[in-house]
Image 1 (tube, protein in one colour):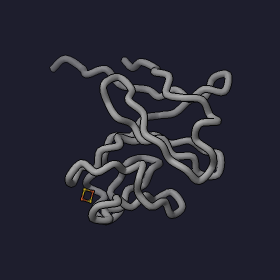
Image 2 (spheres, protein in one colour):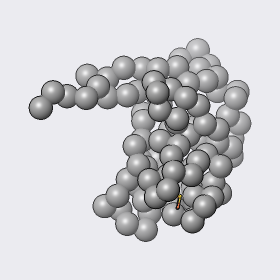
Image 3 (cartoon, rainbow, N blue to C red):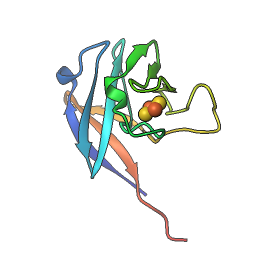
Image 4 (cartoon, protein in one colour):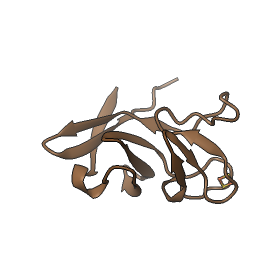
Length: 107
Ligand code: FES
């Protein structure tokens, strides 16, 4: 089960930029790469720096603190693909971006 949450309008994140937004009690980094939008957890899993403030090279963002690199399409740590930060599917409705959070499943 998952739920959609509105993040922002498309215009707030021009191509080649990234911004962070608080959504469902999580700070989410939204990236616009050549008109495609991607969303990952904004907090770097190393020490919590804001990934939306990182250096973007293609689909890879480098953390501004220690340069760990993440693929914004799926959150994978490029240098060790066994590790990933959370990534959220993005949908667009009437010019607004929405992301999908999966509900935790009972064990
Ligand atoms: Fe991101 Fe260290 S806080 S690499």
